[in-house]
Image 1 (cartoon, rainbow, N blue to C red):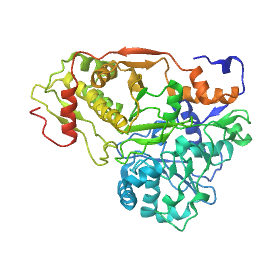
Image 2 (cartoon, rainbow, N blue to C red; image 1 turned 180 degrees about the vertical axis):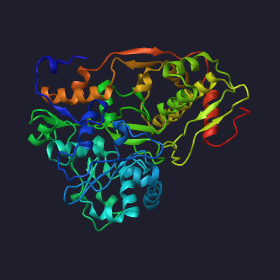
Image 3 (tube, one colour; image 1 turned 90 degrees about the vertical axis):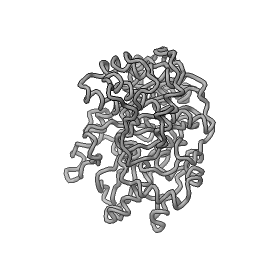
Image 4 (tube, helix red, strand yellow; image 1 turned 90 degrees about the horizontal axis):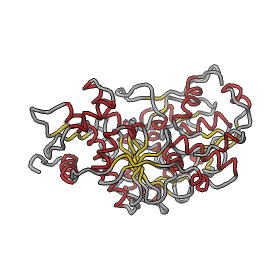
Length: 466
C-alpha cells in the first residue's frame, strides 16, 4: 500500500470506524470524566459469560441513549446481548419477516438496535421515557469529537429502522414501539459516507492531545474492511474474529426474508450483504484453554489428524447463535467415541466454526450474490494454518489472505486519503488495493459428507448412519 498521505505531510484526518486502530480513542471517552465531572461514563452491559475487554466490532449495534440534559441514561446493550430476543420476536410477529426485509433489508433479531429500544420500553420504562437522542457507539464518538449527531448508511443498516437503498430513516417502524414519539427528532442526521461529519472541536482536541480542526469521518467496520481489501463483485470475505462474518459486494439491494443474510449498505453507494455468526475464534480459544495449548499448537494438532468419515462434529453455538437464530442454544459435540483424541477435538473446533460460515456462503448464493471471485480470509483467525486449510477443504476453494494486518483500519485510511485527495472512495480503494497471497488449496478430502452430517446436526436429525 502506498501511504502517500503520510509522506507528503497531508492534513490529518480522523476516521471514526469501530476498528482496533481507534479503540484507544474510544476507551478514552468511555473512561474519561473530563468532559463533565458529573457525567456518567458510557458503560457496556456484557453477558455474564463475556470478558470485560471487548473488541470494537462488538459495539456496532449497541444503543447509547441520551436524555435532554445530554447525559447518558444507562449502560449500552451490546449487539451480542441476546436478552432482547422476545422483543425481536414481537416485532417480527407485528409485520412479518417479508415486510421487514422489504423495508430494511433485515429481519429483527436480538442483535439489532430496534429490539433493544423495545426492550428498554418493556423493562426500563423510566429510562425509555428519558430518551431524547438515540445513537450508536460510532455516532456517540463522532458527537463527542465534532458536536454533531450524525451517522452514515453502512452504520445505520443494522438498526432495523433504516432503508439501505433509500438511505432514509423509517420512523414509522419505530412507531411500533411508541407511536406518540417524534422519532425523527431523536435520530442522528444521515450524511454521505464519503463526506466528513465535521472537525474536531477545540475542547475535544485538547483532551485527546490532537490539533483542533481535524476532519472526522467514518463507516461500519465490515464496510471499512471491504475498502481496505479492495474487493470486487464476486470476491467473498470471511472475517474470523470472536464472532465471524462472511460478506461480498453486490450492486443491488438484498432482501432476505429468511433472516439469514443482512442486506447492509456499503460505503460506496452499493451493498454489502453479510451473514454473521456469534461463534468463531472464541470456539478455538475455548479448546486452547481446555487442551492447555497456544493457537499454533492447536492448529498443528488439528492438521495432523486424518479426516475420518465418522469423526466428531462440533455444533459451536457456545453462547447462543445468530445464524441460525438460536439465541438460547449451547454447543453440541457429537459423534465422539471412547478413543477421541486431543487432535480430533482440535479439528472439530476449527471445522465447526467453518461449517457454520459455509452455511452463510450458501445463503449468499441463494439470494443471488456472486461468489466466483477470490475467497479471502481476514481477522485474527486468518493467521491460523488450520483455519486456512480447513476453509480451503470445506469451501473447496483456493484461500488467500491480504498483505495487511488490519483491513478495517486500512479501509479507514482509504476514506481519509480519498477526502484529502478529493477522489471517490472506490477510486482510492482501487489505488491502495493490497496484494494477496494464496495460503491454502483444497486437499484430497471431500467435504460433502462432513457438511451433510453437520447440516443434519443443525436440523436435529440423525447423522450417525450417514
